[in-house]
Image (spheres, rainbow, N blue to C red):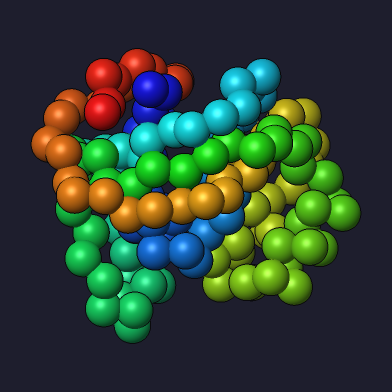
Length: 131
């Protein structure tokens, strides 16, 4: 199964249903099931911002399963939609300028938390034998 490694707190926010898009500078044609891997990297400012949620933020573990249903180019229309949905979770992408930066949002649906699996992450989409 395909896996994507994501920094904390973003991986947990996806697993807990707060975040429906994962943003990358590259697009993917892949659609289907994917595992969410909480990497060892941490976005410290974001961790402070989401402290009030009192969530656990494991690192170096696969923590959820989801489905990539779309890959959308970030434009002003998507930014407005995200601002209405949750301006705190999507603050970084909403405030970013669109000049010379092709960014894409992977739409994640059917998110299910799973029993954590300890494993090192990798760049891009990678494969893991998940049963």
